[in-house]
Image: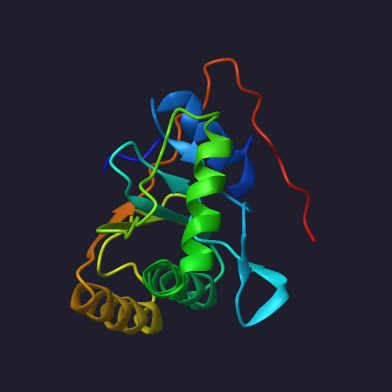
Length: 178
């Protein structure tokens, strides 16, 4: 998967996810489109941020502060797959939401089970995602989540999100001293 570049000056994570379907044909933004949590019906579970035309679940995170955001991301992938595999209610809600959010253009089968998960990560400004730049605790969390997902028949891919090049007419932003 080749992720859409992220314009750090113009988009937070929510705006980035909403923008991707405008750049990638067939992608559907599922950010904040939760399924009801079967363990606590007053809360929701976010299955993924994006779903691709090939039915790949994509989880997106701007991890600029530390390993906690990435640990959450990897656990989101694990919980999402488990809920889709084990809960008829969560799966039917997700299938319906994908159809609704895509205005009927993306229809998942009623027995949908994910086969591929992508963790798309943007680290702090100017830092490319490599095994060496991933936080050590996040490395362990990723390996554990990937092993469990692969045990459940799901392939895992980790991709770095590139930063968008600044527009030629962009005005530099200066931040005052704290």
